[in-house]
Structures are given as C-alpha cells and as structure tokens.
Image (cartoon, rainbow, N blue to C red):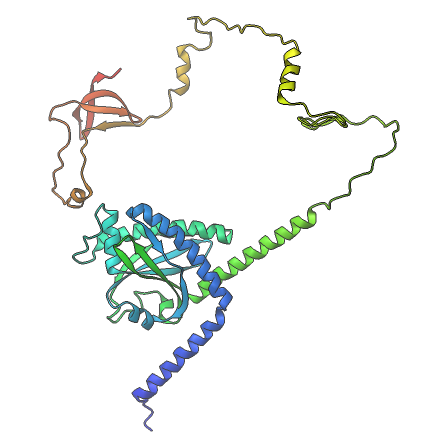
Amino acid sequence: MDGVMSQEEISALLNSSAEGSAVSNEELLSDNEKDAIGEIANISMGTAATTLFSLVNRKVEISTPVVSFANWSDICEAYEKPCVFIRIGYTVGLDGSNILVLKEHDVKVITDLMMGGDGTNTDGELGELHLSAISEAMNQMMGSAATSMSSMLNKVIDISPPQADLIDLQETIDESVIDEFLAGEFVKIRFRLEIGDLIDSDIMQLYPVPFAKEMCESVTKNMEEDTNATAGNKESDPKPQPAPQAAPQQTAPQQAAPQMGQPMMGAPMMGQPMMGQPMMGAQDMSQMYAQQPVNVQPAQFQAFSGNVPMGYGPENIDLIMDVPLEVTVELGRTSKSIKEILDFTPGTIIELNRIAGEPIDVLVNGKYVAKGEVVIIEESYGIRITEIIK
C-alpha cells in the first residue's frame, strides 16, 4: 500500500526477467546454429591443443565441445575457487570477443611446464608471472585457432593479445571488471582438458549471443558460396559428345600442324602399337634403337687460366661502398637457466666468460672480424682496433 515492494516481489520480478531473457536467446540460436558453433569450436580448439602440446611437451587432449546457454550464476556454481578469465578480442574478420575460463590450478601447471618444470610446482599464489605466461600461451593457441577459423569462414581473422585476470567468483564482482555480455545470457562451450596425468578438468569458452550468431552466418554464407561455385562448374563443363563414326575415304583438305606434345592425326601414342601391329616388347625396342647409328664425340672443355677478364677489376667494389653494415662490439657472454633469470633483481651481478683486460670482439653483420679495447671518447664509449682477424 505504501508503494514499497517486498523482497518476495523483487525476487519474483528478477526470476521472470531471467526466464524471458533465456527464451529470447534460445529463439536467436537454433539447433543448427548451435551445431555450427560447436563445430567451429571443435576445429579451433583442436588446433589450439596442438599448439599447447608444443609449449608444454606433454600429451594434450580436448574433448568434443558441449554448447549451451548460461548466465553469471551458472559460472559461479561451476567454479568455486578463483579462476583465470582470458579475454580474446577479434580485430580482423570478426567483430567481438570471447572469454576462456581456466581453473587456477590448471594455469599453475601449464605455466610451470612452459618454464621447464615438471608441472608439480603449484604451491603459492597465482602472480603476474603466471598471468603473463598463460597470456602468451593463449596468444599462440588462439592465434592458431584463428588461422583454422580463417580457412573455415573463408576470410582473414586476427586477434588482439589476450588479457588474463584472476577473478574470485565467490566475491561480488564489479561489472566494470568483466565484459558486459556476462551480465546477461550468453553461449557457454564446455571442453574436457587433459594434459598427461597432471590436468583432467573442464574449461569453458564464453561467447556473446550476437557474436555467436555472426559466426554462424559466416559459415552459412561460405557454404552457400561453395555450393554455388560447384553448381557453376558443373554447368560450364561441356557435355560428353558421342564418338564420330568412320567416314568413307576421301581426299581431306590440308590440316593444321599439330601442337607440341600432341600426336599427329593417325599416329600412335608413345608405347601404343599401330592398328593391326603387335605391341613391341622392351627387348625388341632396345634392339631397334641399337641398330640406329649414333654419333658420339668426346666432350671438349676450355682450359682455365689465371687471367682475370677485363671489366672485373677491383674498382667494381665502388658499387657497394655505400651499403650500411651493422657493427657490434661484444664484451662477453654467459648462459643462465630460466630459474636464475627469474631471480634477477636490480643490483644482480652477471659474470661473463671473459677475463678482465682481455680484448673484446668486433663483429660486422654477425661475423667476427677484429679485436679491440674499450676507450672513452668525450662522454661516449669507443673501441680501438688492436687486431684484424683474417
């Protein structure tokens, strides 16, 4: 009576809105369109699995995708712990983005394998190093997936560098942090990911409904173009004509010369007998060619001399005098493991493989040409050549 709605009325209103949205999205994507989305995801993730195998050097298997509709509460119920949301935006060919959801433990295993570990170093919190590593892995995986989609949709498709964020699904999420389409109904594609005996869990790929519909329309259009092209080729093919019957013998006009590679009229094809004659065997043919006279002469070569022909003098080097070359001065080198490099901090000292006072190397376009010593010219470093390497 006072114009204030009770909690039961508010809940009923929200539930009715969610049900209406779900029905609307179900009407937007038919069963055939869901099958098309599943096929696109199956081919794309199959290519991505091959790329992931090369990164982790472990057997990678991704199951057949399952396509359905979902909302944010469904994602929160499926994953209880913090998850990594990886956003893949399309810059060429498609207008939109999708999100790949991975479990925190799975990301730790993948990044540990990428850094040379055995996949068991999963203690500690997920940090920026893990997010950077999984972003690079997804950049290569989804890049290869985009190449597969380009072949399927018959147009160039490219992606922007993926962005990875750690999101705790049990906390209140600010809508500015997640994509707008996650606030309503969206398309969820679920895969089963297995990496050796280290990972056996689910991953999800989330699509906005309009973006999924755009991919379905591209697939349908490409199939129609292929069908029309095939039908056009069949119509343009000449129909087979019946073989002409033998005409009575008469004086024929002069015929055009046969083209190269085609036998003359009435002449047999190579390896085929004349009409009424038996086929010659290999021995008969060798005897026939052996009876024909062959003119054989010794080969004559011009003797080499030390005289340099005129026009090839050293003055021709003037033609390349202005070509720039890259000169590099190498103070020294060393080798470090990934673990040692990750331990670098400001102030870390790296020992090189060169003794103090030893001449340094001078390279031109990567080729070792000289040795020298470091000097200071005003406020810049320089190099004084002490030896030319021949």
